[in-house]
Length: 132
Image 1 (cartoon, rainbow, N blue to C red):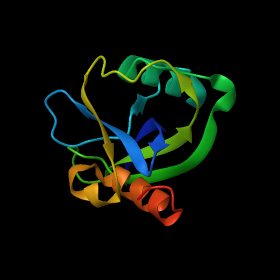
Image 2 (image 1 turned 180 degrees about the vertical axis):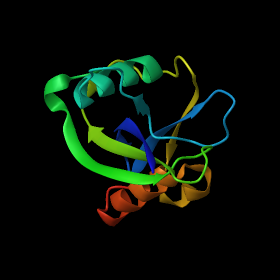
Image 3 (image 1 turned 90 degrees about the vertical axis):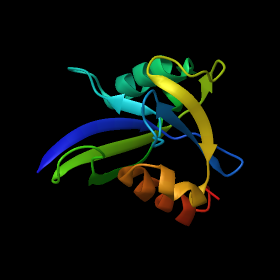
């Protein structure tokens, strides 16, 4: 089984989770992305969030939430994405940047428009009572 290593930024406000849709895509994803050579989880998170959302993570506030795995969308069967999730405080105004076309706040009933790994994350957060 091939694995795709990704880092995700979990931001929840008023029971909704920050999600993004890339240009040319119809599915929403939790913001984040792949690690570059030699990057730590925290370095990847900070870089990806700045690139995609135009905000700056406060490094001392980064906290691990969990790691989730599922079949990767758009890949052949057996290629799984491993999503390591973190929350953090940030400064700046959220703004779609780079490949991101839209920022949207989703809740648990939006499962039909998100990726397979995000469905697992949404379910986990819903069971914890933070995602409505």
